[in-house]
Image 1 (spheres, rainbow, N blue to C red):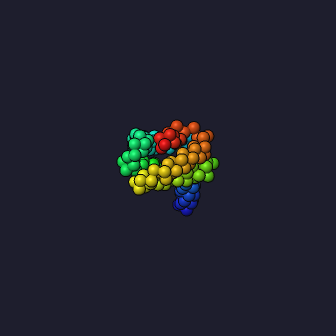
Image 2 (cartoon, one colour):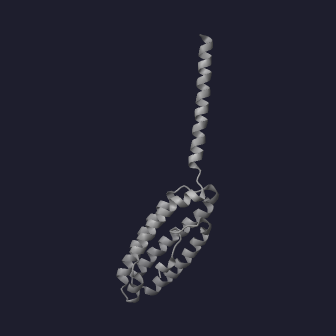
Length: 166
């Protein structure tokens, strides 16, 4: 009877060790994010955000040219909210370890873009067309910097088309 208990305890311990190893390996495999899988997860978020931005900023250039600054300010505030929501969703996507620094910088640029959209809206609301145009130029530059950071990812929707802002 003693031998059977030892065999049972040894077998149970061995089984537990093998099971634990398999679980750790499975968790490591599941947590491993590649650039391609990151892009696959990020693109739908960016697509939704881009569509919201386009909808929010439709005809905004004409409104600003016509001096309709208050309605344009509402459009930029709406665009800022949509962009901010997209950035928050992107921040929740696990990043590949090898690209974490680059993606971190990219997300910081996107956050700065959100703040510039908000500032444009506030400037337009206050009737400061010149100040709003200054922020639009800064937003265009910010967009180029953000895009340059992730050129190697071959994004489609996650690249910012700054022509929408001017």
